[in-house]
Length: 164
Image (tube, rainbow, N blue to C red):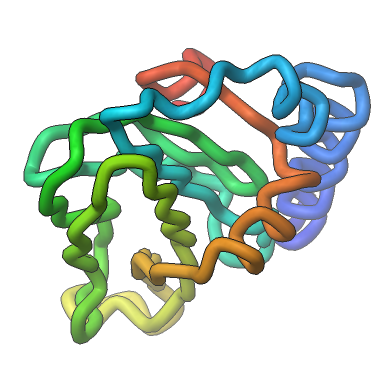
């Protein structure tokens, strides 16, 4: 079985798992979520479902502390005290300003989208070796709400056991 066929099979299997309802979409759970604390702030971190880029669950850090992980097509939510936060995603590659710093006020909701891209691995002698670079992008509230609506929602603080 070629690598391309294996990759296609994996993508198909993940799509079926999503259709089977392993995780609810954000729209499915949004009405049941408690509102953000009056004296707190809310942060959504999410990734589009881009199986051709990376199927990895990416650890997310706030001010250097891991607060969970986001997989392709997933969104996580964290309620936080107001303040300044540096939002980072663990990345093999480097990119200018790939982490973002944001000041979140009480009552505010911030949307952070993690995008990814593959590139050649400069440290490898294998000409076909690649690395994945993850970049955090801050998104306006209207776009963020629209983009997370159909993503799978996970309240887990850590990567699912099957994430590897």
